[in-house]
Image (cartoon, rainbow over all chains, first blue to last red; front, side, top):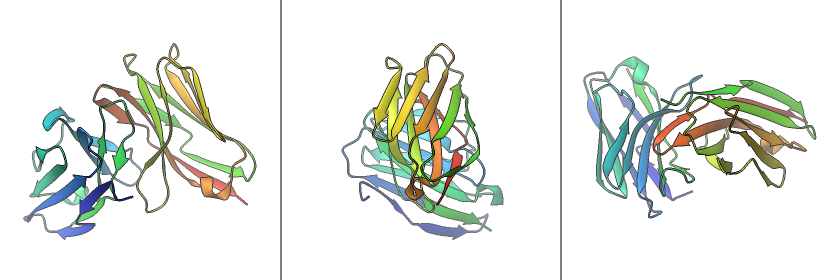
Length: 112
Length: 110
């Protein structure tokens, strides 16, 4: 359960704030992912990094900005969010695309 | 891009009965099909997966079947137990193009 960690676990922010979510994996994987999980919606893939390079960006608004400084760390920078951005943000890692993804515990984000 | 449809959205079964969840996908190049289980308040965890060169895979009470021609795959849980109650997600993956199904909430009645 400690292979992928996320901080903070809960975050409340106003629409004009700037905050960052952090993810760290201790599994030696080469790919990391950001997902958004809203009630009654599928897991939405936001960004994928492979070997620290972004390989997928699924039409995510520019108010979400990812950063992958190395293969163990992944950040999601947030600015001028909207209330509909409130959701659980999950980070995951895997060794290549066609292997099991290990998920972090998520950050519960509330935008007020 | 890939589009995955998952049915049913909710499933209630009597303890000991079987549960079946079905998914269809659109990208014929998808070659990896994992199933994740997410218990309430917890993170998704892989329970079984199958690759496109295999038609069926079994792990104790859980099995997955894949029909590449029809582009659908299914999860089968036999002898269900209360601890099987959770949300189950299927996914279809082609390189780093992946899409998850909307999830099936399974409730096992004691």
